[in-house]
Image (cartoon, rainbow, N blue to C red; front, side, top):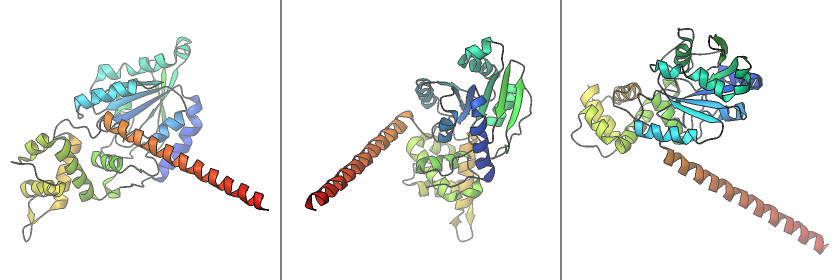
Length: 313
């Protein structure tokens, strides 16, 4: 599935971020711990251009602890990158973030100058909630749906840090099929921009594959259905009721599954693993090399043909 969802304020935000990035010392990127790469906007890396980044793997209380630890180790192995597992209730951990920002630019911090940080993240990863936690009061608008923050804002913290907020921005087109579905299942993309039952079937298939015990336990399934469609039908029969004629209400079943998945009622779940993405990136690298070799070979053959033409004249 390729999702194309890029509201006008997001396009404007990208231009504004590019303009002010030269004056930013540290980027704070808020990710969803349940889908760290799918919720990592590739535009952030290109916009920050080597500026140190602190990646906050938020909503870790909803994520699979074992998979979260693997992601933490992976991100901390990257250059100019510091990662933390976090959720907005961890006040002591959140209070360490300003000091962590100062450690990224010690010369500026030691000179007594405010460290200029920009907080970034795609919609609905908890960015505004994290700002309120950093400030110790509710200033940034918070909502349980994506695209609440519409414009850039700046806040000054008591501990010598200047914090810039940005709207949650997705990239223009989400090409990776699994990432698109995961973002939709997690609530990062407005429900009006997706096919609800399509996303629910994907989520049901994922849960059947990766977390069958949690799935059966939550919906009291005596045995695991053979397909994702049958999972959704089973949920519908038990929880959504039937339409006239004994037809399962799949839309209502989809709402139940996605709402309970997003809220954590099914248990601690992570949509992706480090090994999965490393394998995917390696496959992409090999494919890029193959295409480059084909291009070079085409250029070589074209050059030989030109040489042959000249020699026959």
